Image (tube, rainbow, N blue to C red; front, side, top):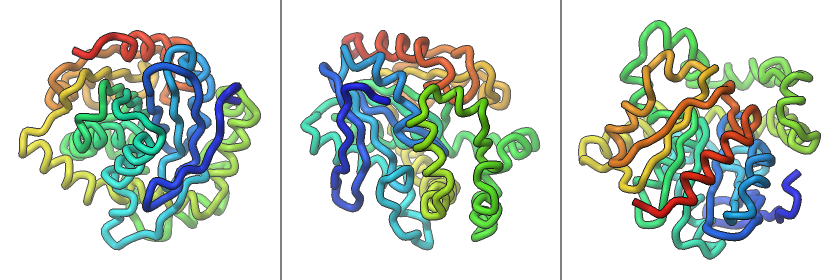
Length: 292
């Protein structure tokens, strides 16, 4: 897994992040979603490392990165806190400007990076993700039925008890998913994370931050007219339900960014595992182009 890459634990201030990095060229930061770790990128990263210096961290709370103690307002799991970790990581690694790719929950962190440190983010790619506020303002019975876990995860204690009673059943840890990951090391990393009570709780805290502090920050950005200034690539899975629920994601992202382009990818939700070649090609083409 990640042939030629280096694995490190890097102190970024409030937390320590587990990071896999390698390659050469312009810096590219890859941010995973729930309930994955940086290992989800193992095939994509090794398709990009001849053209880019690829940095793949476990987000705070995920994998083997620090799991801060929960706060009453869940600020320790806010996307602003996660984005600050990532900005600190890239600074410590010597990258002043870089591209950012975020999938699922990592897409929310990627958006926050582009809004909070716009001088650092050269280009931005969002995979199967929309701002929290856009989901919640469009919430109807279809969304609540399909994405019910968003609301269940907000409850205290009960989600932890339900998941940890049988984490393999909850997360669908089966032979099909194992084959999808394409690597025994990636599979072992996934199982270790989803079976660990501290990680499960921290991943739930990520969701608990959504309707409160994350939504408030996004609402403030929108009211102030703050938008993503760099080019934004929006990719979504044609066999998932994002477009079915909300329509063309590019139309929504066009209200958050000045320059939006994108397309569907023929796969299910976990794009990096199901369509690594197509995804790596799209990212190489987008991030390999001059800014503007």
